Image (tube, rainbow, N blue to C red):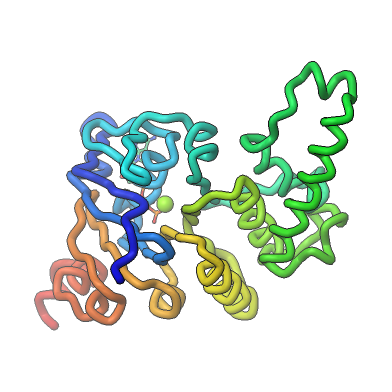
Length: 260
Ligand SMILES: Nc1ncnc2c1ncn2[C@@H]1O[C@H](COP(=O)(O)OP(=O)(O)OP(=O)(O)O)[C@@H](O)[C@H]1O
Ligand SMILES: [Mg+2]
């Protein structure tokens, strides 16, 4: 049976003055898929992510999530609906413990207001206990529950990346966007992250990720979308994409591509 469409991107464009960062890009992501976005530097990958996660408004086009238009919604509104992300540069709060870092991602799910929190009403304790349990479950998912009470800044880079992913999972999303998750990781850390992402997918998660590391793309992507100068130039399974003439040309450049 074909899985249902979770995210639909329709004719999305974004210009910064004269720079057409994203141009008429359309594609969809189905439930429990792992979809990769690849393309040379400056192709518009992060800009596309910024639009889907509500950081930037598009110049034109629309984004639908679970069939509902979500274009222009704020990041916290999208998180409450089920879309979260990690960033191209590591964003871990170094002065906090690992579990506190994860709990930051849960605020859209917490119901306690300032009044009840200020007066430490019983429901606050109940909610805090529940939040702690939920954060611990997210850390277990990425295999670092034993580090919950360590300060985040003493951890290796690859472990901090897992903290970010646990935080993205903390608001119980159905779709997580990862911007270059493998960047800066050593081969062992990359392998661990691949296993974590595949296990999370098997538990029901859907991923859209930007990645330069083709080994990772080949290992985990069900489908690949290729951007070049803001345009979608190809879409297909990883094997198809690596042999696509336009993709080879985009990566090798006009002249080298012509001589192949
Ligand atoms: N806020 C901005 N203002 C002006 N131009 C921008 C802005 N953000 C991105 N751009 C431009 O839009 C284009 C696409 O940038 P983007 O960061 O989306 O590329 P990318 O595919 O993520 O690249 P990389 O692989 O290097 O991360 C580039 O030409 C970039 O200079
Ligand atoms: Mg980028």
